[in-house]
Image 1 (spheres, rainbow, N blue to C red):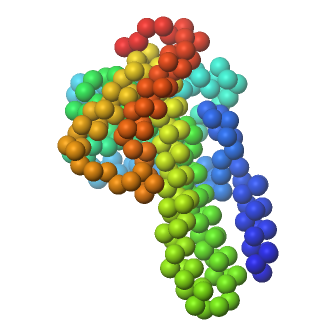
Image 2: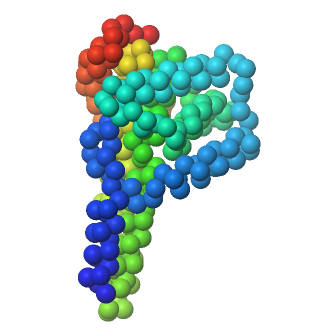
Image 3: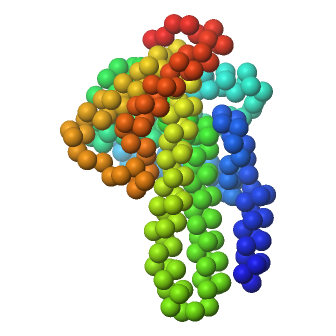
Length: 270
């Protein structure tokens, strides 16, 4: 039974992989987009119906304008790299929602929400583009699908452990520590890698959209300053890289992002 479970898990991983066009990496796709996207679209519509969506203002118009430019830039990059039709199932939508939370998010398939609380940190349209690029990148890289797949694998590991360990005391110890261990050593690093990927993809597509990629690191400098000196958890216990790591990485990525934008005829930036 133990060997059978290992073989089944290995088969699932090997047979359910997809290639991320932005990174070239093989990624887990245990849950198909044909299941994920309808669920995401339904959840998004439900969220909008239960929250105050801002419409007809300069800020809400800016969110839509930036979103359209960023998604168009992503499409240009994909087409130029022979990934025609990659976005055929995406249904882009960009909304500003009244909420004090300093947050923005993107559901699989291109459903994006900005909270009004993040606009002061964004500071300007290029700051919004830096956030938008990052959020759109999560959808482009199918990070939602990968997180769901990782959750499936984590559950399979728990089942396999309980089947394989016959001694009741050892099985109880396994159950006690497996959740924490698999999260700290597996789920959290996985999540941080997604954030780093989204930073890289995002800064590239914001540049292709004509927005200055230098602004991305400045955005995170403002994000860090907004913490008012509050101590963040150690990076290895966080779903996100530290502010300092992010700032340094984005500063290093900006020249390459400008070089990529130049391939599309973009040599000056907003």
